Image (cartoon, rainbow, N blue to C red):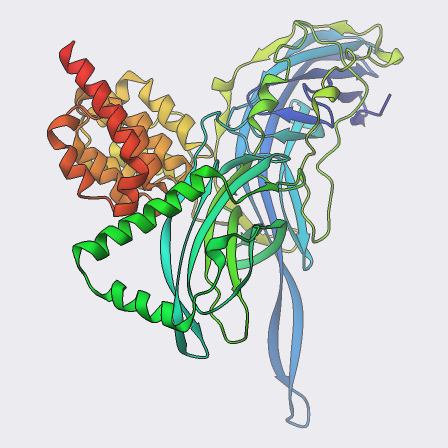
Length: 587
């Protein structure tokens, strides 16, 4: 039995007890419920007691910096002073207000219990905390209760983001040909490509990476390494801080295609490559298909473990956490350019996590005296709420409330849904531990937004979850004209407004059926693939082709936008979409 936070005043005591979460290790899952009770004990007679509470989620940052000033002493000599300063900032992620109830004619010694059950917003980011160079960044959540604005008490609790989508986002990297140079002398070329089976990876899960290359140079390949890197950046006002670390590293095995060529072989290959003939183009296409086949055969595959301590990928107003995969080919010798390319990743809560959780707590939850701790404070190394194995899921029912509260009068449970939550808010920054607050450039969503394209794009740009924001507007009939009137350029603007690029294909597919009254055409497909990052062009094509109403008549115009490699990668998608379109037209 642990201690719950409480606060005493001249006329009573207020305490908070949170029920055990749906997961071990004090992690409440976004989109699930937070339940518990607020206990009030009167030490004197009170006419009435009104108990109110609210949940807050915030980004909080601090950056340490140095100010330099000069001064002259009595002899006219110039001296320099260095002053250590701190800049703090915070931004609201969400707020949920709860009216727990009111009790009249409270007698001294009376005890009252106010149970609650709150559905947390689905798109909350995970709790996190990092410290570096005297500053920090964190995302934290608090449950706060008070009596008429006084006698406030609060309880920290951890949140884990909702599980990732079951639909993978693969990245099939277009084979690139790089010149191999040593001490400014050209030694030939190397063609390399890779495939990441899913770039949305759960923390504690494994990334599957396939690699293939053809060494057409005189330089020996000594190794090909792949690693996952994490970068955390935060700001307070105009001051910034960051931290980087490598989460995982593996090496690919050596294959026959890694072998170097002789000088004569390289010369013959270069002469053939310079001739822009049909034979040359056929060989180029064959090289692409060879790399494509080697990648999909899985002949050179590594499994890269993502540590459970990794942060969730997040793009906030003050805190930004990014992940990327680095693949580097290292040649023997000195002064050699080693080909390197990067692949963005999105790390989050594993897909399987949600299926392992029992979503419904008891209808009248019994309070536990075990308080939920806050996210742990770390040094330079990041921390994140730990995941758990399937064996850890079975949990004992919440224990009875503390003995001293056994006689408390229990009010009707207050149930609050997601619709009450206000998600998003302004960013504020200030010096030191307090002082004048300066408002930063962030957008506060309001309860009623006038339907317009500009407001939609603004909401998408600053949304914690763009998909949830768009889905909410699509389900609102007042916003239907905004989607129906979208031109291809406006459609692409909505896609480009998504800050985390991983979500752009999903947003494109989500909006597509609603444009032009359901007449989604090839112009929109082309507009979409022109604005998404290169590595997302093929996933975007895969999602949009089945939705295109004039695909048969304009398939050539879409293919004209694609590179040779993209045509190879999407060949099957076109065949399937054309077959479906043909069946629909016959029907």
